[in-house]
Amino acid sequence: MKTTGKNGPLVAIVIGSPNDAPRIKDAMDTLESLGIPYEVKVLSAHRTPERLSKYVEKACSSGVRVFIACAGLSAALPGAIAGLTTLPVIGVPLSGSTLGGLEALLSIAQMPKGVPVATVGIDNAKNAGLLAAQILGLLDNALEEKLRAMREHEKNKYDLP
Image 1 (tube, rainbow, N blue to C red):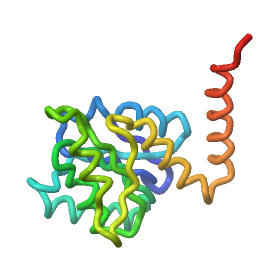
Image 2 (image 1 turned 90 degrees about the horizontal axis):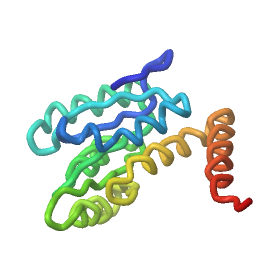
Image 3 (image 1 turned 180 degrees about the vertical axis):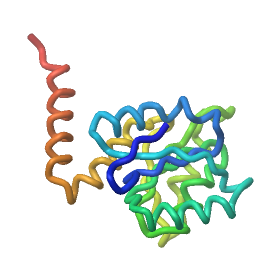
Image 4 (image 1 turned 60 degrees about the vertical axis):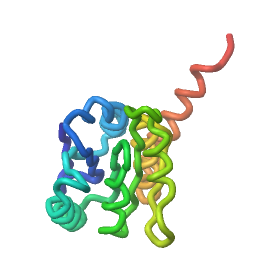
C-alpha cells in the first residue's frame, strides 16, 4: 500500500480502520497513475490520538505535502489532522451508517473557523486523489500537464461520434 519517491511520500492517506482500505482504492489508483508517491496509515482520532499526533508531525517533516483523511460516522480524523498541521487536508466522508455518510460529510464540512478541511463527496476517494494532485501540480509543471491530459482523456469519453 505504499509507493515512495526519492524523498518519501508526498501524500499521506490516513484511514481510521483497516476495513476502510478498499474504499480508498480510487485515490491510490489516481495517485499511482499520476506518479505521485503516497503512503497509507491506519490511525484513529479517537483510539490512537497520540500515535496520530506523532505520525502527522513525522510526516510533515519527512516531505508529505498533502493529507487525505477518510472517515465515517463522527468523521473526526480529518479535523484532528488539520488541527495538527498547516498542510492541506482533504476529507473523504465514508458511508456505512443509517444516514449513508451524511453525518460524516457534515462533520468534515463544518470545521471551525481557522481549521479548514477540503471536503469531497461521500465515498469519493478518486476526487480526493485528484485534488491532492492539483495542489501538488501548483508547483510541478509536469504533473499539471499530466492532469490536463487526464482531463482531456475523460472529456473525450463523452464525445459523440
